[in-house]
Amino acid sequence: MAISDTKFHNKYRIQSTRAEWHDYNGGLYHVTLCTKNREHYLGGFTA
Image 1 (tube, rainbow, N blue to C red):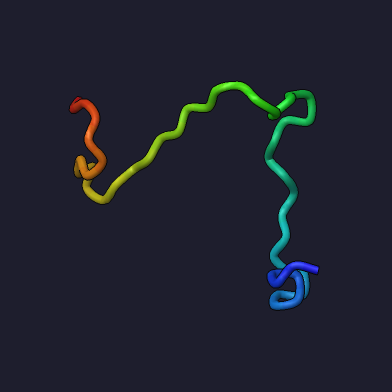
Image 2: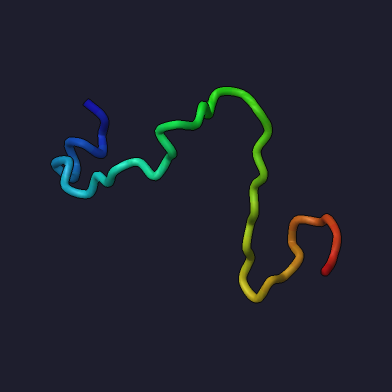
């Protein structure tokens, strides 16, 4: 049993938002990070 299961008695569990028809194993992913006031802390390009 996970710590969150014992701590919250399974109260705050939600259904998965993943598509049942999609295979999430492998492949490429795109990650978007938002910072406060859209400050550029992480490098990269500017808009």
